[in-house]
Image 1 (cartoon, rainbow, N blue to C red):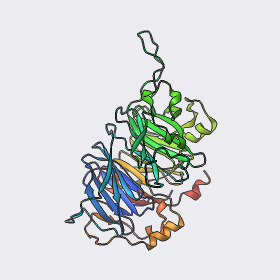
Image 2 (image 1 turned 45 degrees about the vertical axis):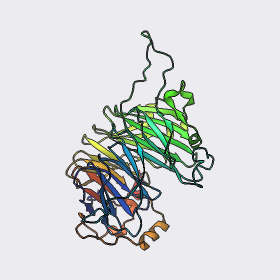
Image 3 (image 1 turned 90 degrees about the vertical axis):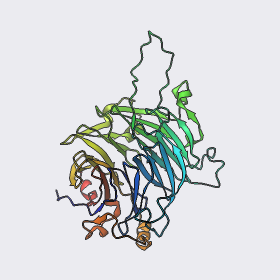
Image 4 (image 1 turned 135 degrees about the horizontal axis):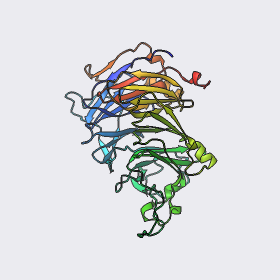
Length: 429
């Protein structure tokens, strides 16, 4: 096994533990957020910070770019939708510049009791051509998306919102209604509540137009729900329904891979496989694709496969764009890499001194985006002292950005790694 590379770049602009990192779709910007509510924007072309400001009164739970604008989710019970960052990127919120952050164009109240970030599912125009009820009042054909968040009324439930209308279309989708009034002699079936929602993931399979919702819970359980894009037209509240048959989201699988809370969870781009980590030593894989394709029983545990890592205490997990490499961040600062198919260890990365709270792989980039990236203007008005430094720039420009990995830790640092090409070796797994 080759010796692990050091990070090729460090971002040191934050002064509290990092809680979220996110590459924009073209891998030209890296967003990072910390537990004091500050957001940093790093221009990856010149590796300089072009924005740093306090966006929330509480810590940052999640960051994502949609339609060129940043979405930020804070512990202050609100999700902000920011204006797009325009080129050429001019440094702001740094030093004595007057502009202190991206303008907030709209906001959505949410529930952050459980530290669970939102999940965003962009919908292509072809996906939503069959429906027009939700966005009838929109101006022309707008790009649409679904957003899943913990319910405002119950942290054990999940709500689905439609964007850009900001309408809640499905409420409490994982609520199980009581089939009959309870009496003192009623024997309650084994449908215990699973605790707080810890992680939410929306995915779409373009081949079937089927939407999947996977949820990780405080008691270590994972549940899988399926719906279709046609359900976007249906406004539904599971708490008001007398029967589960009315719910556009159908639970198709549930299982428990951990004895403690799901601390980290990720699902590949098509929703076929999921992975979870917890305070224990297990890395658990879930074959969601088999559940759907073979229509397995609700409690069929055969789709879970676990791998015992050498140490306990894991806080984050991420799958790369190809779905072949898994990264796991631990309490003691190490990042371990595994084959998604065989769990074969691929190496470990060591730079953080404390817990690795968040991981993010770069996005797949097509040839057109690569050409644009080399031609685009980048940052102007760069400040030299921006708390951003390069450890080793010698070879990183030749490594495709889709092999980059960003990590954020309790030590307040963001590290950027350029991974070797594991794809060829994994073909033999």
